[in-house]
Image (cartoon, rainbow, N blue to C red; front, side):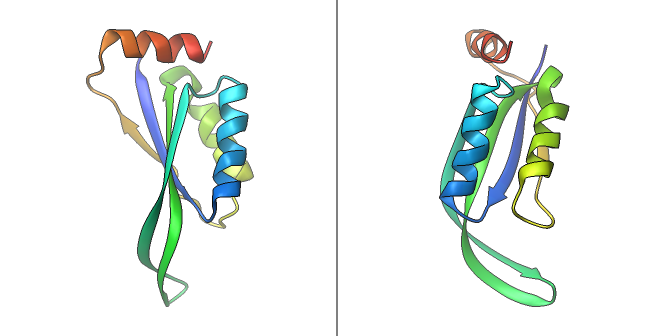
Length: 103
């Protein structure tokens, strides 16, 4: 079984805490890391320079679709970022922990 990282951005700490707590408790992810970031982008032809929270969801191939569905259904943004990063190499003890944590 492989490890997968899903990243997404959230508008505030409350929204990331809600999905992080839910997905860890439901064993969809082993861990969620998040941090406050600055983001510069255009949205609906308007230049934006704002702060957001970047979330790094750590899960398995088996749980990635469920995680993406949960993010999509619960996300406060109209067009949320849901990007999958495949892990080519990961240390075995960490992968074992990740798999155990999501079973």
